[in-house]
Every structure is written in C-alpha cells, then in structure tokens.
Length: 206
Image (cartoon, rainbow, N blue to C red; front, top):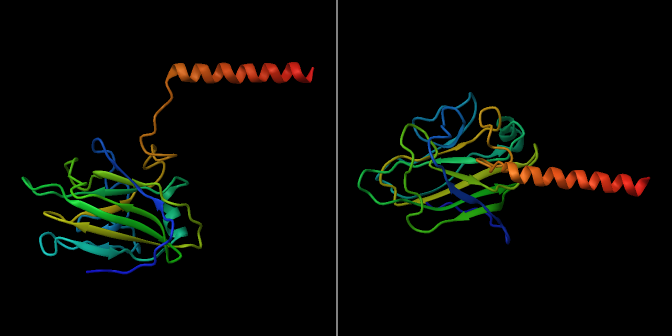
C-alpha cells in the first residue's frame, strides 16, 4: 500500500537509536501510535493497526491525525520520543525501517530514511522498545500532527510504535533519554569557573 503525503523541501532529521536493555515498555509509556494487539490504549486515543506478519511483509501507513494538545498531554513537559518495538522471527534476518516521518499541519517537517536491515530485534519481552525515534520538531496545542511509517521485510510481528511519556513515567526523557550525567571532575571545573566569574564581577563593580 502506498500513501502519498506532502513533503517539505528541508525536513529535519529524525534520529534512530538502539535501546540497551528493557527500559521502555508500551504498557507503561503509552499510548501506541501504530498498534499491535498487545497495545494498551487510553480511552479515546486512536491508533493505526500495523499489518500482521508475513502477508504483507511491507507497509506504508499513516497514523490518525492528532492535535498538539493531545500529544502534549502525555509528555508532561518533555520532548517527544517514540519507542519502536521490533518482532523478529528466530533465525531470520534484520528487518528494515525504510522511513519514518512527522507531518505538522500537513507538511513533512521531520524525516528518517534507513538502510536495509537496520532494525534487528534486541530486547526480548512483551512490548519493550528496541529503538527510540527522537529529534522531532516542537509543536503547539493547535497544530495537527500525523506520522508516516514505512517498513520492509517483516518476518514476525507485528511491530508497534508508542509514545514515550515524559516524567514521571520516563524520568530520563528530559531533555533526552539516557542523557549523560556530568562527571564529578567536570562539575568541579564548572563550579570553579562560575566562582571566578562572580569574583571578577564583584571586583569590576567595587
């Protein structure tokens, strides 16, 4: 199935990052944007069902149209991240996230384009994210938001894509998931620099 959508001349790049361990689970950080049977949805939140395994093995599908207010109500002030849960048959090769995009007010503003075999399953268990999609553009309450999901070579499944809520459900999601905590030595250097700046300012004003 081919779905057409308007393209922006200069869409920003969506990032795809592997998740190390079972950190984000759909039953905790929900709802699903693209859903399989295991998805737990809040009342009234619409999603698009992902085709079942095998036939078809590829798809090009659009999510429902959301408002910025709908999505922000789950983010708790954090940035938008989506978890991608991959289902992969034993002994089968990695599958392909061909592209993923976000449309804002009917224009593609963010785009990921992937190479063949880029999304092998890494985290076992029900509904755990194998990858994080991030780097999405900001939006306000009145914006219309829609997502496009293009996938090839599905050999098990179906996959799902779910919204990762901000704190408290995902305390590491602000400003970015798994952000590096500054080393103690770096904090000492920063503190020393700030102290020197304060002293210099006092000397200048006295």
